[in-house]
Amino acid sequence: MAEKDAELLSPAAVKAVLAEWGIKPRKRWGQHFLVRREVLAKIVEAAELSPADTVVEVGPGLGVLTARLLEKAGKVVAIELDPRLEAFLRARFGEHPRLTLVRGDALECDFDLLVQEARGFFPYKVVANLPYYLTSPLLLRLLTSPWRISLLVLMLQKEVALRLLASPGTKEYGSLSLLVQYRTLPSLVTFVSRHSFYPPPEVDSAVVRLEVRTRPSVEVGDESVFFGVVRAAFAKRRKTLLNALTSSSLGLSKEEWQRLLLDAGIDPGRRGETLSLEEFARIARRLQSNSTCGEKP
Ligand SMILES: C[S@@+](CC[C@H](N)C(=O)[O-])C[C@H]1O[C@@H](n2cnc3c(N)ncnc32)[C@H](O)[C@@H]1O
Image (cartoon, rainbow, N blue to C red):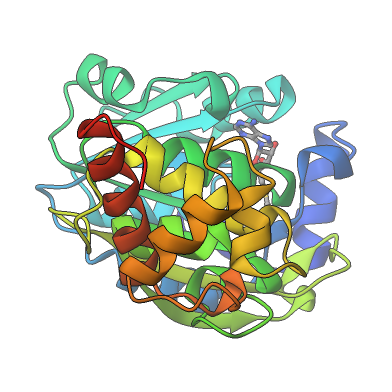
């Protein structure tokens, strides 16, 4: 296995294996294979794996990361969409006793159920070099499902990584930053050049580590109200918070929003992108206390 690994860590080796198996990489499935040993090492290190860990890997591809996860973790559940790569992986890993290979779309899978079926341990970790098109929908699903995940270590497009880590008032800050920072403690592991992949993508990447919080970072009451306020504020980035909220479907008049924002200690003339998580939470809590009293402000 070690020898085979070494072979798959150069563009020439990956190219040759793909040709041998008649696999043409599909751009729309984000098939850019990692060929840098140091990056693999950083991903595995950031996941802090032990034999007590179960890892779900999304998109194992040719299995370079899978092999390293298997060296450190107790169990690995790998979900691959492409039947051609699934066939390759089955040949590569054989009947590995600690690997469960699932052929399917990660967006359709219930991760908790897969781990349970694989007799894995909870909470588990998610480690993946993600196809770019999948990043936002998958993150949304992973962070809004009641699944028992303790940590995510993900390779994603650099620009998306910067959005996850962004602070209020920056152009990268948006609803994805808020969701991630609400649910997790995010940190940057490393930036990764496009030349670390074969075939190289058109953008650079980054690895991020998202430590899932046991409790969200702020008290928001009903989360659907909180995320409704966040979505409304960012739907019209150029508008003031007052105008963005008034034109949303949240149901208050301009005067009502004006009063609610002032009561929450927030200047209605600010833009949504300048508000911190705590300030959004304050608006959401006010909105809920209004409606539970049956009285509009
Ligand atoms: C960026 S490549 C990473 C491959 C490998 N892990 C590596 O690091 O070299 C993304 C992988 O995700 C797979 N993939 C794409 N869409 C997927 C989906 N919806 N569910 C599961 N796997 C998917 C692709 O076929 C590909 O193997």
